[in-house]
Image 1 (cartoon, one colour):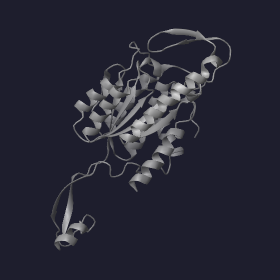
Image 2: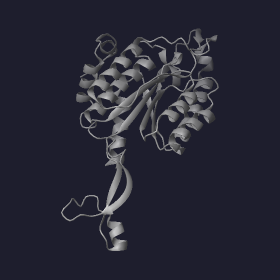
Image 3: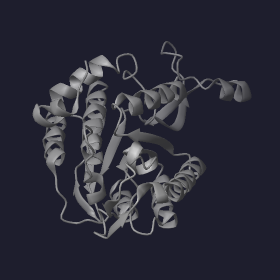
Image 4: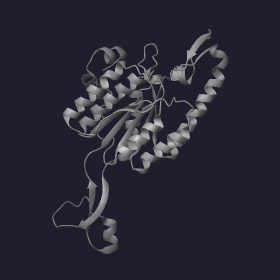
Length: 303
C-alpha cells in the first residue's frame, strides 16, 4: 500500500496506517530483526536429565566432563526507547515531503507497530535543548495506544525553543535508564557549533550502560545535503538561530556541499568507532528506504 503525506497528516489514525505499512512493504522483515538482543548470560546450573539440551554449554563440558546449562539473567523481549529531536530545524517543510519531525514521527509509528507485533516493550522521549517528555518502557496494548496518542500532536508541532541539545538529552536519558535497552535516535544533527566531542561523550555514557544505540540521521537530502536550489538569489534562515542570509545558491554550493560531506563523514566514522548503527533517513523518499535496509542488516546480524 502506498502511504503518502496527505494520508499521514490528515487521516488521523497513525495506528491504522502504521499497521498497513508493516503488513505491506515490511512483510518478511519485521518478524524478528532484534531477536535475542536483550538476553544476557548470567550463570551455569547443573543439567537435569530429560530437559531440553538447547542451552547446554558444550565448551564447558569439553573442559570439565560435566554437563551444565546456561542460565540467563533476562529472557524478556526487547526493550526499546525511541528519542525524537523536536527542535526548530526538524520542523522545516519541503514541498511534497514530510518535515523531518513528521517523518520521524511516522517512522516511529511504524517501529512501534513492529515492536508491538513482537510483544516487545517500547517508550518515547521528545527533546530539543532539553528533555521535554519521557515515557516509561512497557509492552501492554494500553501503553502502545498511549504512545501513539503522544506521537500524533507532533505531526503539527511548533517548537517554542529553537535550539537543539542532543548531548544534554542523551546524558539525562542515560541517567534514567537502568536496564539494558535499544535506543533509537532521530535527529538532523543541526545544533550550534556541531560539537561532536560533547555528542559522543553522551553516546559513550549510553554505551557504558550497555545500551545499544541506533541513529537515524534525518534530513531532506536534495536541499540539505546536495544544496539543490534554483540559481536565483534566495534568502536562507537558520531555523535554530534565526540568522538570515541572502545569497546566490550556485555561488556557494560547492563550498557548502564540501563542508556538509566532511561533517557527515566525521559522523559516520565516529558512529563506526563506537559500534553504532548509522542510517541515513532521507525525507524525500518513502520510509521503507530507511527501514528495510536497516532491518535486513539487523536480521543478518541476529540470524
